[in-house]
Amino acid sequence: MNIGQLALLVKKFIEKSKKTDSKPSVSYIIERSLSISALRTLLEREIKTTNDLIELFYTVFFLFEGDSLEVAQFKAENELYYIIIQEVGDKEYKEEECSECDGHGTVECYNCDDGNEECYNCDGTGEVEYGDGETDECEVCNYGSGELSCSACDGEANLECSSCDGDGNVSSEDEFVYLNNEYWIYYGEDTREKIDNAVKESTNDLIDIYDILDNTKGGLFLLKTESESEEIELDDFENEFGSYYDAQGKYLVHSEFNVNQFNLTNSFRIRQMGNSWTIR
Image 1 (cartoon, rainbow, N blue to C red):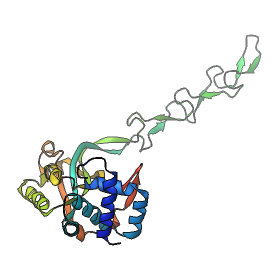
Image 2: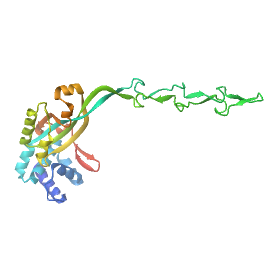
Image 3: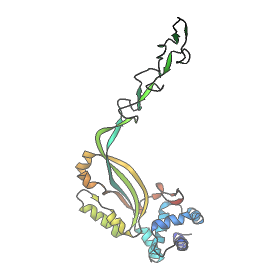
Image 4: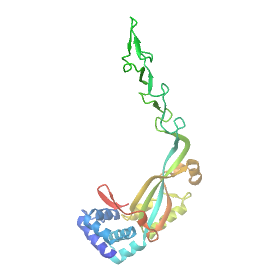
């Protein structure tokens, strides 16, 4: 079966399963289609690349939007864009290895060498002398060993490092800004032009991209997110983008491609996420 035939079949499945009269988003079409076992098996057999899967599901989306099959396929083949955007995320002090414990989180016990200390009852001799001059094994230290488990470290011979609270790392004096990556598919030459114009009009290349993407009316699909995917030293960040507080929450367009120019199969495929299926 070709993509056009599969798109008509998928549309019938969606029409039977959706519970409202509203037009389904492409995210709903993808997740609903892949959750139907028989349909998912058919698609995995008939379609070999992620690019073709995306083209199929967007063809279905455009059919629901009222386009003919010919127009829907043309849009899905030519007007889809893959975009990677980076959100200006949190600002934090970078962690470095604790110099007090060399990153282990523990230091040697100050009270003992091997986890034991001298018995207080027999002063380490293992024997106790009674009033009549007789001696006997000390009953406090396990019958004459002369040692007790160290009261400071409970016999571990190590203590939690107070400089890093046992973590092994401490905050440095250098602040870093984290960038969070998001990978999206959207459609429309007009949307691409709005994004490009917003970047050109920005003084620092940072934009409120969701003001644009939210207007795609269900034609936006999230492939993946990556938290703290990149870090930039605060001074370097502000030299390039200006005040962190003005930039926080805005987005940098990392890269953008027509889907025809990028092989999605190398990075994304059908996956099960909990109880549902999607493309990730």
